[in-house]
Amino acid sequence: MDRGDRNAAVIVGAGPAGLAVGACLRARGVPFVLLEREARPAASWSRHYDRLHLHTHKRNSGLPGRPWPDDAPDYPARDEVVGYLESYAAAFDLRPHLGEAAQRAWREDGAWQVESERGRYVGEHLVVASGLNDRPHRPTWPGLERFPGAVLHSSEYRNGVPFRERRALVVGFGNSGGEIAVDLVEHGARVALAVRSAVNVVPRRVLGMPVEEVATRLGRLPAPVADAVGRAVRRLRYGDMTRYGLRFAPFSPTRQVQERARIPLIDAGTVEHVRAGRIAVRPGLVRFEGERAVFEDGTDLPLDVVVLATGFRAGYPSLLEGLGELPAELPLALPRAPGLHFCGFVVTAGGTLARIAQEAQTIGAVIGAAFGVQGGAAGGGR
Image (cartoon, rainbow, N blue to C red):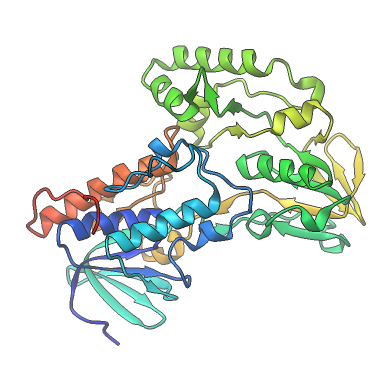
């Protein structure tokens, strides 16, 4: 079933990236359709664990045409982010097709065909905005299927209330893993963190400045200089953590982002709990033997619950499987696929939302120009 006339664009995903692109197109009067597989926009944010806050300062986290209000906290909480995104959609009269997943997309007759479970949409341009955190990544280990306790991915974790006085292992030392470990401690669990490799940790602020702003400035320096400064800040703030089981990476947090596309742990209390012995650091996880987890150094630990803070994977490969292999770092457009744009897939030290805002404005301008509209950046909504 054809779902109507050809649009200038079809946007897949109504998270921050899709909403931002939609606002930039709305401001230009460009017709588009916005598809969202969930029952509400920005659904992934509403499902995150309770204690989650933005890791970037509010002044660096606004989407085009609508900065965070002055009375918002510097680092808004999960529910405040959800409220901001819902008000953003309302301000720009964005009306996503909710509960409608895009299943595959291909180019035909000079336009993009996007097939959903309800029909087909046609657009001169296709904007993939489903994000890097589209699908939970759930690794496995020998014996895990026989572990008698609870095993949940970080996307399923809400808070530590059910795990009071339980023996918990968090696998992974990213921002989700670090915060979930703190949350479990604060709810009375006995917590260990499985950390497979050397890590980078940064404070939320450096000399009163949000760390993402410091990282952006360091990124403009020659790599050896930025590396030396980053390591010096880390050493002065945290010292030697090897006695606690943490090994710091030989490269700086800035280089980790630039070369490995991975954000360092932005410390929200994790290191303090490690130093105090409330979080025990263990090496990489090898296998399970009944209720016990066995680690690379041969030690083991009895457990009641395992939380997999092992990240996510992007969903666009299955949507675009007909395009063949895509580059590891997605550009805003691919020459071999005219009219295809990506928004929200670049890891940057300056913060994901700030990058999304930049990309959305660029994509809006490109599609607007193709539609015959110049200027018209997103304003303040209605």
